[in-house]
Image 1 (cartoon, one colour):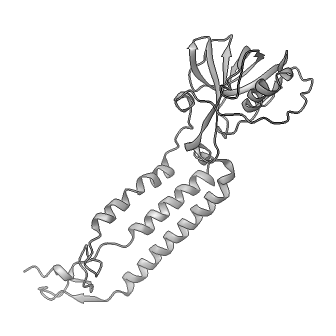
Image 2 (cartoon, rainbow, N blue to C red; image 1 turned 30 degrees about the vertical axis):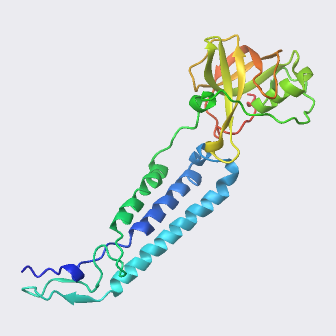
Image 3 (tube, rainbow, N blue to C red; image 1 turned 60 degrees about the vertical axis):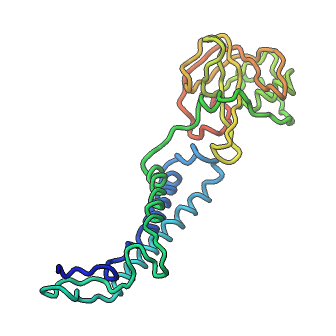
Length: 274
């Protein structure tokens, strides 16, 4: 006999799994919101306060669970091993087995499955995924619908910066405002029918990256840059039939320059003028 208790005397599994998982998830949320802008690759900017609040709550809840488990362990009575040769073996006095919760149910399998949730939590902490790009923009050929709106009068600037949504909307509902007007647009490139016909895109979201839809303008007059390259183009609207069902106007490029990916890739903002 070894003196080590078996059966009823075995130590039950740790209760730290769920609290640690909550802390990991909350820390991941805070890392992507408070300490970086990574969250903008998942959701709209307006959800920032809700994500921060959720992250802080999960961390506090997890730490409270860890504290409660520490107190339980300190208060748990100990007993001497009955068959110990020297009386040196002690362990918590708990009549439950490793997998029994006291009512005949086993939970080891559920615990292992629950720990699989640690993978996305660790991803939030250590992995910064890229924003959606050319694959999403061209996967089904669909383009986001643009609602009719009242467009303001354009100024007399040599070149007018526009968001893609405004440019597409004007090409459908207010074409006279685009005649002979130099426009600046920013987006990322995707391949087209030929090297000289490609697309400038922005992805817009209603809530999160899962519902992203592309805004797309057909580019002509310049060789296509590598896909997913962010560029600002200067040029003019190329007159042609653009409908609400197929909102993809054409654009004749006069100048093209590569730019850095914007802080919020899902915000359809006009390019800044240096």
